[in-house]
Image (cartoon, rainbow, N blue to C red; front, side, top):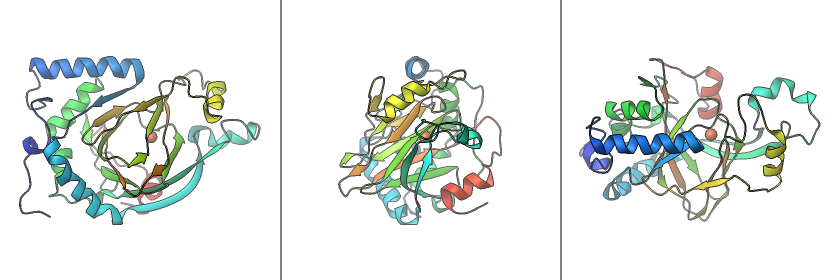
Length: 271
Ligand SMILES: [Fe+2]
């Protein structure tokens, strides 16, 4: 795609986050701090992960790919895992309430193999670092050509409604926030494996902000979060600037492919 591909060292701030020196005191400190916030709130931010002088390069790549995004406009419930029994709940119950989604996702196949974003994603020390953060002995990049490395593109008015994630953890890289709003709001551990805590979710849907945190996603911030039990959303984007965020997918097993239905849902294609 580009004759002059920057090296990883020109993209990631390896002085602040020396992923290339896994046993260095500095990286151990980064990991320890990340563990503390992940344990407490289920989310950890690594601001300045991307060097300030590399942001524009990455934004340019993402912006050039944005028109390839698979656009979707729909409403959905946050409780995909309870979809089969939603009729058991009253109409105004959180299980049956739906939230709007207006999103576009650039499929992984459209993110160039020789581009900057994949230079970062395919760098093994990043995969190993993510494994350390979530206390896994080893992780693998997803093998799914559609959903391994994606760009979320939110234009004016676009939003990502309240939901829980099906996967155990997510890794995102903010490249370009919206001019205004388009904020990532996260309710840490509002539910647990044993308690859906529907009353608190109903209050949140009705506007109660207790326990809600707004994560300051600046350009170049890497975000690792556990969204299975922490309800989260992205507020509607204001202004004309696209909100551009990269999503990296990993799994405990090599060669992981997402289910065909998931591929279709997010990219409109199957692999
Ligand atoms: Fe999510």
